[in-house]
Image (cartoon, rainbow, N blue to C red; front, side, top):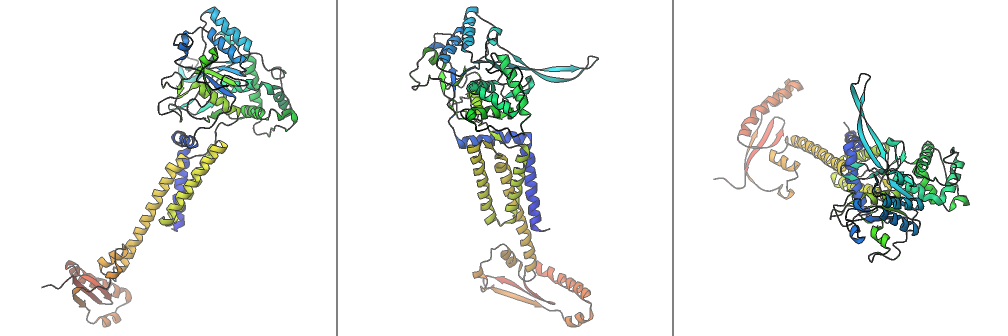
Length: 553
């Protein structure tokens, strides 16, 4: 079999194996946990957009406001004061990542309700609960089960005045968070917290957005035709569901934003809305850095209007979306925390509210990570394994290994460059940590076995003409040319068959060859028993010698 065919087979085996592993569940987890983490760490922190901030409740907030330590024991009027202050300071949208369940003190609750209604820009989180529901047949026997999820709204008086209600579920891989949803199909394509925040934040571009939908031929009903944005949470959700349904169905259609003056001032926002409604509901989070990368303002600083640790202008929230929730940049034991690639050595994780703010910022700038699809990833892994396997097998190791290292480094560089500049996530861990080492090992092992087989064949061939130890030294490159003509002491023995010429003339070639084999076998065993070096075979003659470094006595 030609060597290039073997190289092609080895490369195909590594390529197909890498593609199968990379697209499997363990391979995906390996790529996410190792490859994606490496890409983030090499890239390092990046600045978030200026339109987002976190209002953090931490373990010092209660003391600073003369309130109980636990926020669960606070009067809800304090949240009303926060809403009033944020609205006065120009916040575009106020998002609470704090669930407000059953009512508490009526007067305190009402103060919060009044502030939410007055601000007309507050989004409240809903709980997403799930349970397994048994399925029974007509006779009452269990035949299976189905997982059912439901939304649990905050207390009615708050829900009725909120501008938006939304869940914020985070899928986990082991204990790590990498992804979020924009629309949750299990609860009727309900928009999630970052999606609703983006839609409400786009209020200034609302008229342009409606005009754009009209130009695209998107049907408008009574909910979507209003010149003003929806007035309550139910209308907001219904409107977003309808736009999602209409635009995701037009995903393959070239819907463009015209460069008209009417749209020029809102181009970025309109692109963000288009990407929200047309894009995949399952997004990969593009983290900005360690905890606190999103500007984080203490809750008490907004209430009191000052904090000596804040920079000038930190309390100016003009046209910003603010996310309110539990976030402590110093306490590893804070509630609602999630392990990410940027979790620090001190164990401080990103809080849920900062992840929500990060997800919103990703939607606002359309910068969530873009993993290549399964077909593209499979082709990349197949091509990488095929090329590396053939390269290392076919080229001499002295050239193949450095070239393979250079090309693997080039692939890693391109992968990192695409990640940093285009937010494109290409496979990294499987090619670099699985396929490349496997190609290196298999290719070099195959070359070693090939060279060993050649060495044995050469050794067997020259054994007919040289002493065994000399032949072995030659094939293993251990013979010093300077020692080839040295003088040694020896006793020689020459044998010759009497009458060989007559015998050779009388026998056919095949019978003569058989006769000579028997003859040499009869002589070879005694010579081998006496450890003689055979120096020459010539027809029926043998020349051999016993050698020594000096004369014997």
